[in-house]
Length: 371
Image 1 (cartoon, rainbow, N blue to C red):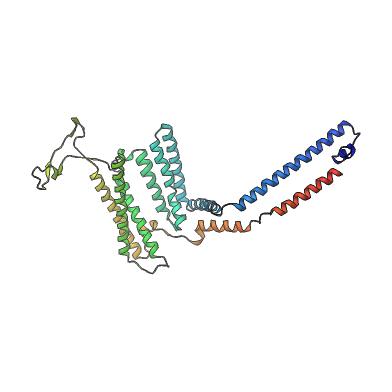
Image 2 (cartoon, rainbow, N blue to C red):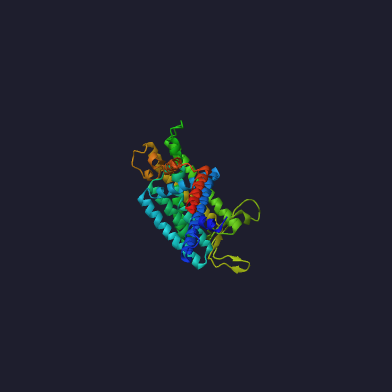
């Protein structure tokens, strides 16, 4: 091809001044750059469309379900202003305590702080996952119990500084465990899909037994930690009198008594406690006793609540959950909104349409070069 024709195809006329040649070359460079950039954007867009289209359906469902859970949890936490204020305040305190423990290098206490942050979300998660409505008094009590047990009790050593701290928390634990057991029975008893009808006395007894079972399991957990991990969750008690058949020299199962114990010597070293050190037994029995009291109090109140069918004003009304209403089932609403959004999305463009656009663009560029 002659040089004149080749130059004409590229938009450069022979005999033009050097400035015109430079300008024509710059214009050709810009067109080529724009074409490459457009092709690159088209390829990226097509890759994204193919990625969404070819994504594993299970992975896509899990990602969508995770977004639905986050949206439902956020709305659930803000449903009741009082519980949300308490939740936000306690979360700020826990975050401040966590930063302080990390700065001090106390990583065990930092672990308790991180655990507390997770536990503070449990009431909201239970409401979203099980579709039940926790009354604000019950939710606030649970949040305060978690904070008092982990942050104040473990991190700030209130179990040691305040002698009755453990006793108060075990009474509250028995009360809350009875409330949980009672609520489970009430929700089952009120479910229209079930045919049985339980008496108030049976429901109160079930709640009481559930609470005591939780208390016993917790003591098993404390003993396991002390025995296998070398902790001291079952606190020791100083006593001054012991009774034991092990001290009976005649081996006739008669308890021998040692009164007025003022000191104990171990391996030639005095403990200096002013008495004998009981290893956790008294603490365990005291915890079970106060758990019994808390469970009995709520079971007694719950009996009259069920007997009056919830019409009589009792303290149990603020601690008995109820099924979610349709307008407050935030997880279901989030799933419906996601399903509607997916159905409203336009279908991805096919590769045939992309090739047609590319061919039209190439023909247009060729025409511009010829002209």
